Amino acid sequence: MIETHLLKLRARFEISPDEEAAIRAVISEVREFPADRVIVRAGEPLGFSSLLIDGMLCRFKDLRDGGRQITELHVAGDFADMHAYTLKRLDHNVMTLSACRMGIARHEDVKRLFQAHPRLHDIYWFGTNLDAAIDREWTLSLGRRDARGRTAHLFCELRERLAMIGMADETGYELPLTQTDIAECLGLTSVHVNRVLKELRENGIVEYRGGRVKILERAALERAAEFDPGYLYLQGPGEP
Amino acid sequence: MIETHLLKLRARFEISPDEEAAIRAVISEVREFPADRVIVRAGEPLGFSSLLIDGMLCRFKDLRDGGRQITELHVAGDFADMHAYTLKRLDHNVMTLSACRMGIARHEDVKRLFQAHPRLHDIYWFGTNLDAAIDREWTLSLGRRDARGRTAHLFCELRERLAMIGMADETGYELPLTQTDIAECLGLTSVHVNRVLKELRENGIVEYRGGRVKILERAALERAAEFDPGYLYLQGPGEP
DNA sequence: CGAAACGTTGAAAGGACTCAAGTAGAGTGG
DNA sequence: CCACTCTACTTGAGTCCTTTCAACGTTTCG
Image 1: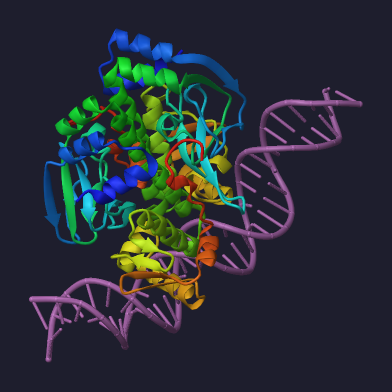
Image 2: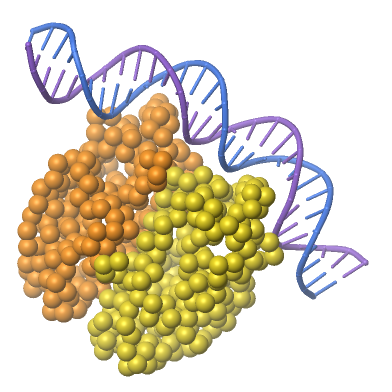
């Protein structure tokens, strides 16, 4: 059930059977949510963190005029808000983008996990720092890439992150995002995302239709994105 | 020497004399750097983290065309790269913006610190999560605020962060950034930043000249920024 | 005092937005 | 099984914010 999570941990760290058992035990409950449901609101006290088992969700913030910015996307196996373990209340909202199953890890149990397995304390800290590294790359995109580059970069990043859990290959992957969702990730309007997608499609680089990203020319895509996967720490920390 | 750091910790957590002594002891060395010096390069293995004692520095990433994006700003008392403790190599560069003094905390010493004082483990984790929260707010700015709003927001944020260490008051604060530096924070060109600063000055909202931010109308500034300091966790985690 | 970096301003171009209208597809109910 | 509705997608035309390019003013400091 948390296989995707373990897959991701083991890509970067050795996890002993003992540690694995402890991680499994910290998930005390599983909850299901339909698509487009806000499941955590900014500012609310939060006594647990949520491991995404199935589906896709995002963290987002918004402005008074209705402008919404998605700040992080999460795929199966990600902890959506492990940072709540230290922050206790979040500065952002969390929303499902597709139907999701979430494993609940209560913070008192997480604390006991770290006391019993100090290595995992640093490993989950690494996890939140990885989220931050991804957010930094998004900051670079929003600040310095144009709409085409941003779009291409998002498709590259998601390919890597999904490939890690066996949900993407060279040809593409399923992605349950509307063009509006993509626009909210990229700081664009959905109208402009539509035009960019059209251009990428007509240039034979990548095609996004019917919830599937079809990579037509991976090299060209990564060139358009100026993609360098280093920030994803695909092999974990330490000398690469 | 690390008084500003302790000031910030104590605004959010109780720190015992014992813990304070341990924190002081983890700084094994102090280094000085002139302004505009890259002190950590992306990808290099890193065996220590740097506590900024004096001055201002930034983390940044860049693209091949020379476009540079500053992803975080750091003021006195901030750990510039505590996240390197888990990441071991960084996905971004670190550069001084003014002359800086940095306290060096070797990771083996940090590890011992956390073993001896488990509370501090979570407190420093909180610290990196706070960095991430700030980065998220920047993501919102870059994605959804216009140039005027972004500029105003940056001035508001820095006022709060500097006020916390006694380096800002109602009237303003010293800021050693060029207009080009500000542009690299905000995802704009320096030419446009210049125009926006002119407008904010002529509207009697805020004035930035000669390395000093002079706040003329704080309410109007915060309104222009749509500023809500919640994301800075000024009173620490827990129920606000 | 002169060079270099920083700041200021104008004019023109361009990328992304807004507004508007129309198409396509999925689900609903009669 | 076919209208109906709702949401998502598509396209065009015009506008606006920000960039680009270029020149000039100002400050700093060796």
